[in-house]
Length: 321
Image (cartoon, rainbow, N blue to C red; front, side):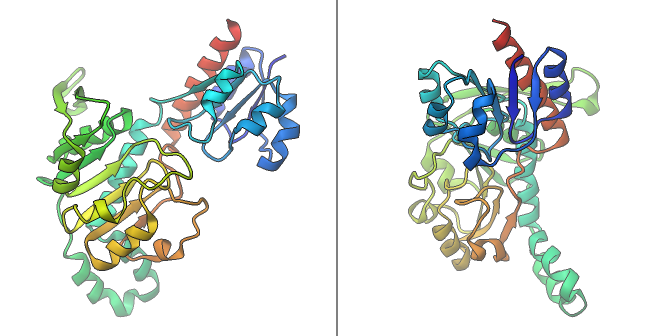
């Protein structure tokens, strides 16, 4: 019987699908340092972002036949090395796109209406700071008519663009591998099969950086690489820009971000990912102009269900071949 370790958990629906097809699925988490020994008892491993499947682990488990990643990015897996060893590698690129895109706007709404400040201060000092908080939060801005910059235009970036268009925003997109994308916007309020189609043409990186009021990043990034967004690029952005990172920690330099937040050049940041996780930069965590979430971009009930189903279907298909 094929044994699968879902080391970062798995939605119940996907687990049941696998078990109904004759697989044994273990969702009891094994610590990273124990995987070298214990993973040898399994034929496949399914992970999210927490568990790392690197060369040393792959070499230690010659019986491993498949690595599954619940989500889009696979920077925690040595994909090419695994494939060279004859191990199949699968992921679920479409399942969490909507959830991540919605979190992007949760951070934007939080930053533009100062919710990260009021939610921190009001429970402790609401009686004495209420008037001052009201003055601060009354400087909020609307999104309609503003320019949304999307850095990376895969599935998540496209969902971000759809929401932005629905809010009446202008959209500027940079992606060196894409020239244009035809999007289809569903309009359930107008009845079934009501859609609007539009074409998004990409622009240069310089155009997004110079003209966007908000920039969200949806690009791959490997641990140890140099930050893509540093002070040099931030200096070319509009004063008062909002930066959102729900992709990979390290895309934005946290040190340079702090400098630009403190100077006011960057108005606010929304961070779901960090250079180190759990995050250790307390200045970032406590900054009044930073909205925080604990790497939950794709972690909605709906997304987890879709991820579990898609993973199960792909695992079953692979082992049936």
